[in-house]
Amino acid sequence: MPNATLDSAEDLAAVNALRMGVLRLSRRLRHLRVDQTMSLAEMSAIGTLVRCGAMPLGELARKEHVQPPSMTRIIAVLQDRGLVRLEPHPQDRRQKLVAATDQAQAILQASRSQRNEWLSQLAAQLDEDEWARLRDAAPVLHKLAHL
Amino acid sequence: MPNATLDSAEDLAAVNALRMGVLRLSRRLRHLRVDQTMSLAEMSAIGTLVRCGAMPLGELARKEHVQPPSMTRIIAVLQDRGLVRLEPHPQDRRQKLVAATDQAQAILQASRSQRNEWLSQLAAQLDEDEWARLRDAAPVLHKLAHL
DNA sequence: TATTGTTATACTCTATAACTATA
DNA sequence: TATAGTTATAGAGTATAACAATA
Image (cartoon, rainbow over all chains, first blue to last red; front, side):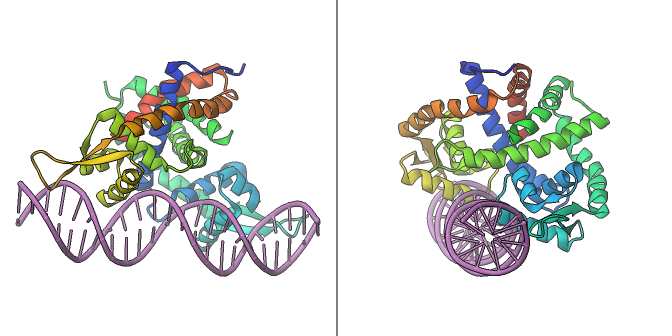
């Protein structure tokens, strides 16, 4: 059942905290990224490709909320590093299917221990209740970003 | 009591969702900002000044997690628009105290109805449980960004 | 004619290094 | 000598507009 109103003072305060928290955290994530040679946008694109499978460049751009020219550049970098490969679309020769390589999958896997280390340091300063709230909200954030 | 371990598969999955959700949402927030003429960094700086009161430029830069030269530029823009004023530090003539003006406070107030409208549209597509999770996590996100 | 993706170009935001003024 | 802030400069990331190839 959808939430229709959402106009209490508490909701508004939460919205502000959410906005500012996301902004500041994203700025810090930029500096704390595990693979210093890969940008967040590149990491995110690879993650989506691994999770959802190969798709045309335009569709990936829509999923990542960037314009097609921006995705063209992101993909060019990833292709140079052997993390994605481009395949012709079987029915439409205008389109290019972008697919993550095995190496991309391996990099995502390898970075997990580093992510874990960084996150543990940060989360050690949260209590169990705070961490549980983040854990519960993570999939909703994800959904919100796609609405 | 601090959370020491944080190494379960569920935790790792939550970390990934959190990272990606924050990244994507911050990208969308950039485009959905209420005052199209003001950047998120500018909004955030004003919010901090209104919330915490006047402070030296360097301290504001640390709070916002940007370098001093970046804050110099942000403040210059805000000063041109009459949203902050610079005052000499009473004890140390090297420092400049940055203070939000009444106009800045008024702008924050005026943008609230617009924020509400945008958020309502988005939140109408979440159910009550999802929205509650975001509400609970917002202050933790805020804290996490400052750790 | 409409659509997919690319190229050319410019803008925004941020950083580092070098500098000035003050402590 | 160390610190607060500024100026100059460069880099990353993204966008819009114009273009090419295909539907």
